[in-house]
Image (cartoon, rainbow, N blue to C red; front, side, top):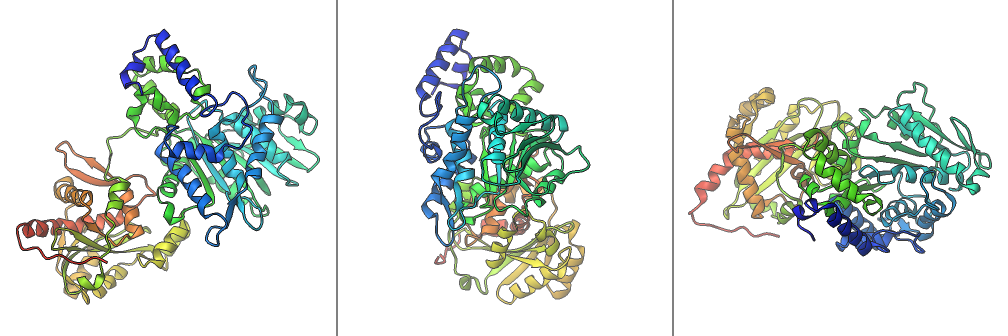
Length: 589
């Protein structure tokens, strides 16, 4: 691979030669000039996993998910099977029946990554019914990657050739002008194809397929009267502009009478950092990273992005965010980037729109997934009975997660973390992944509390029950949220101590927890909930390099880690005092 600076420093002639060589090396396998005679869904997944095609961590995980699903398909626990004929059918339709409405191309050619997307969405079906597995699909790619063409071709297929009578197909966008842009492209594609022209009736605001009484219409969040009944297929375009779920929820609720409806969200990154797209990407990362948790198995994710903003200066990495890179005018793109990167605002637009990174911040990841998984020991809880430990807790401000913790300093310098979380029923009912919470509940890691908020008595009672087994020497707390609970704890007889929430107090203990994690010395008996808390942490630093934890996004909670961190303010001193003392090792099961 060329060095970063070499490519950006090339002359125009050198750049042209490099690009011709780059494309020639990939022609016929990484990108296609003619339609493939076979389905490439599995092929693409293998190429990505084996490292032949550079891809984001999320796409690698999506391909690994696909290959793992193939291994367990058709089982009682996973009743879905991959039907290559059903995966292949919409791809053949788009390539043979749809015609490009612009340019001098004779036909559309779906690329290997599009075989993976379309093949996954249409090929995974239930073993008994044959109905599609995926009800939603998120396709997150940089601009100019053929989103509109793919959307239009799939809309035409779903309206006339998916075997559904009376199907309603919607093009959806934040503004009516954008929704109509998609609709107009679909209409132009039909008018360019003699085959489709004979079968569709394309009007100004509606495309009809009379044979099956199906329609394609544009719709936006601007329209007050949204009739989304009987939805069969919908495409949300550029949802990075959406600030709420109003239109999305209308479409979701309209699927009830359909046996295999499909909603697709296709977008680049944007500047609305608390909107639906951020939630979708966040959920996708959670789903793909934690395969064994079986989160959101009815949603397909294809998240193409750079893994790091620094990769912006390596054109050979741009394919991570732009899977259609070989069909782009790369020489012009590199030339433009070299000029635009000198202007901060233009560089930010490149990073967001072309490389699919929402924003650059001074936040740093706390620990990697590999580090978390390194801490995989199991400790028999009976060995802890009667041992000293320190408590900590993090109360929710309103109706959200609450966590309580006991931290045991062990004789070999490790720590054991025993946690309990609580969530109110109202919050559970509106969670994006309630199935995951039920898994945590079954494992005993969380309790769903009746009502709208977690009463402090639940946390008090947990500490009281734990004190019957373990010696809780002290309970550490954040005073801002804990006045009533702290008084109840002291009235019962617990010793409590306030932890000031700031860089100076928490920085050292947080660094020590990271050192323990890096050494594989944090034992939490492989609790999926606690692992989720760890996955969600970003750290921020002050000018003196002191640390504080922060949530990656609003939906990714760190309450369990906050409870541990408060407890560790006390435990870290005990660990230091144990250094040099006689060490007695506990056995692990």
